Length: 463
Image (cartoon, rainbow, N blue to C red; front, side):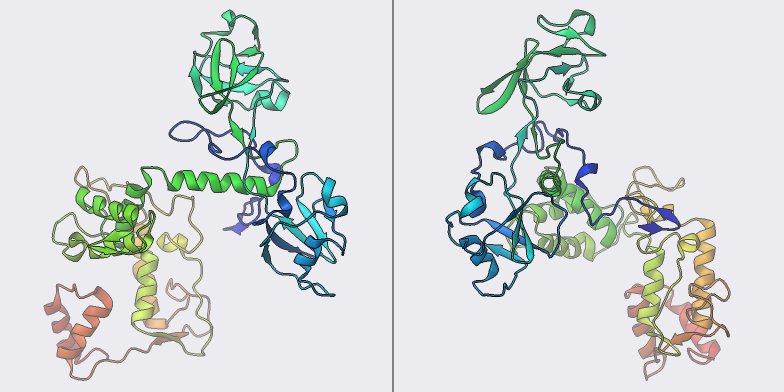
């Protein structure tokens, strides 16, 4: 990616397994990502032939060095090929029945990629985990509660928080538990594998710790396993008890007001959790964004913004687009409408957020605001941005979408690239002012007398 002249070497649409962190990851509320997933060692090696097995067509090439070549006589080959003499490859395929193995399939072991005629398929193995600690290598117990593996230099550099079921970390490395030896900042202790109350644990240094699950084999990382871990993280965050309130507050801030009441946030949060609002059940499921959006827009606090703390400063880029759409902007030569990157002028531009946390922070409070009130959008409403926004809007009215007079468009030869096609309603002021009030201010125009005075002074809306 290249944004604003800066190179980002991480492609968000591609998973590079060799770059992925393969070590255990604690969850926010205890335990580890992967808790509750089946062990890969307990899955059948013939699971790729079982009913429900899923496949994804990769195309006519692959980077996987371990490819199982299927014989044309194989039932799996016939199924994926479509039963025709010339294969008809499908993007997705799920086995409707368990198939018998044929030839090398019967002794193939773990299957990842298959070659069917001239097409490659990925076997979408169900998500599973392995246990991080083995009895072959010592565990490193650190006084701060972190743990690691003493297998090699890489594992010694990657420690993580241990989940102690019983016992405690060593007080310091000068007095390691019996059977352990002092290492750099830790005690290296032999590992005994065990199970306790349905949990896989290790016993080391007089303590019992959870043996954490991992999705990725750090010595043979696969993109599919990395993606399973990412999905597990998303599921964990989605199901976290703070998520409904977090989503509710953020959506209200973006759509209605920067400072919603606790009752408003609670109502939207409940809609997210139950999938229903106002006596109407939508999906009835947790995470229903339709019910959440209805609650955001139809709550009484959204319908009657009367408090001094209600409302929000509208984002500058939205105001630009709003004016162009409501006033029916048209290019004079029917060219594609193109805005230059105006983030330096108004503080915003699509896909140019300076960080992953948006253009502004949700808790931003201008210096002269009352304690307890926030106004996120004011973080980019600086004096230079405000002046540049005003200049750009005037240029848009005078010249269309051009760069003349600090406009928001690209360069044109004669400073004239388009204009507004909106036509005044027949009936004069009484008809056109309400229409403009609706289109430009959502029916909330207060200084109508000032607009009326300007209308009469100019003898209409236009010169």
